[in-house]
Length: 252
Length: 252
DNA sequence: ACCTCGGTTGCGTATCTTGCAACGGACGTT
DNA sequence: AACGTCCGTTGCAAGATACGCAACCGAGGT
Image 1 (spheres, rainbow over the protein chains, first blue to last red):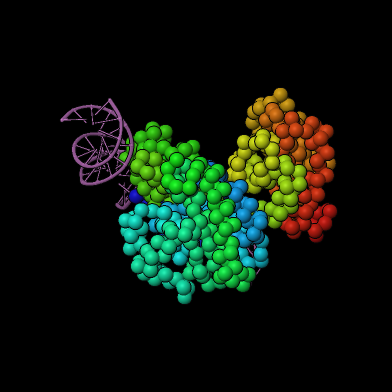
Image 2 (tube, rainbow over the protein chains, first blue to last red):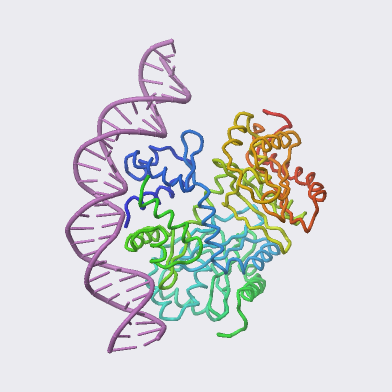
């Protein structure tokens, strides 16, 4: 592990929450401001940071640049884009695309809902596996042994009254998800929101990502949410076809 | 300047162009692979890179995360979004939003055109000041002394037959741009594309960013392009109002 | 079974990074 | 107008840290 690099990356995280002054940053990561200055200079030379006026540093454009290249790398995102945009347009609900990344879920695309109520999420944000519909879909797609391994490794943080609390309950839920082909998060992550999610598949039938719709409970009750499932499945099927998926079963 | 950080950032740039193996990366930045390994590990722990299967490294999700936060930081982007999305929807042409950043133009938003012909650009990408419509708009908004300083500092790389080649010609062009309130790039950057651009203003009348429409020449001739200007101006005015702009002149 | 390729580890050394202390410039205050 | 404060910047010396080496390991391919 490289110390200076580690500090610099932490620095970026700190800068993410608004422009900061040199000493503020120094204090935040617990080093001398000279050190921060040098790190910032290096970051700046690569456009990772920019100086705003005199006494403020902000994140720079290299971030956008790399991020977009990284996103383009993820082919699912591109191939699913059209189908999900349509789904979002037609239903007006927030649509997410997420993939599994070492023990968590990462949002790789987001289409904002058309209501006043907005979800606190963001492309690149991570979320737990046990209390999100996308998490369930992604883990349910894995072989049973892997599922168990993951289920046991999860830290079942309780976020709402409905949050799943044990590996056993989680595994049972996954069985259901695998069987019916979609997952539900019945206000297990945030109190006022529930979601449905379904997988996007690739050429070999493997699950590339999970798409979800998130709806505030004030807008639609649980039955109303479930009534959206056919539309969701139509969209994920379209996205799957665009991603190379060819049939119903496994393989070609 | 911090050496290891510098190397790590260079590494990220290298990774942007597809997954690489350890030795490839080591060679690329001219260090021992052990060093690369350590840097990658640190980057990985912050989710800046991820390991793809056995022998491939790719950019990770921290990039998306930071990038989105950085973009949200740039208020112009949010406040202009609606007007530009409309413009894009109505005309079907590619719309860019760009701002000035130390001697270059940086794209901070992009709305893809609806035609088959796509432009090679990307949010976060940088472009020269002398051969882009957005560049002209941004520089034309600066006080005359600053304009001259910038005009003299530009390296007039010739990209097409129409590219401006001298500070004098550039300054003359800027005068025109400042006067009529919009700029044109008549295939000065890429041979087959021409653009028009206009400024987005903030509360004090200052120019926050430049919006542009890019159109393949095969789709629209020069006069057709100019015919789009009123629509562009309507959009940038709307974006300006959303950004706090209140009147026609300076000040409130 | 061998070879190659990619990744990983331990270790000593030299380098690079660090924190200190002091300076300078820009504001704001008295 | 002079002073004080806040923030950024520089040079330097000490030592922690990142570096490259060489050897090892594991997986694929021949």
